[in-house]
Image (tube, rainbow, N blue to C red; front, side):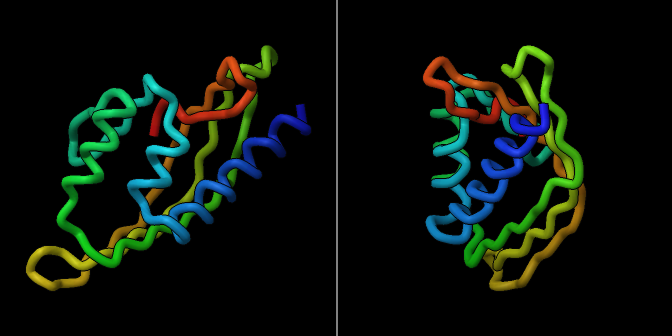
Length: 122
């Protein structure tokens, strides 16, 4: 079980690194399962294509998002896992104002048929 928890920790760190390297939208699309759902602005965005469209239509600039899981658990089947922890977000809005927020995240991961972990809920 510890081995699989370490896989999730590694994927979380790789996800965060990808955000820094390629941007928020690209990283979320990369790590999303085809049937992933994200909860943003009090609505559900369902499916990888919808997630891609959501991020492509963002008007925020200079987005940064940092997080680190403080808890990870993996189902005995090793097919599902979840993580949660704290995040820090900042960006520049369309008015040129800096916005920032801190909070808690919760991600559900599912092992895909190819063996890779992808998130199904964020």
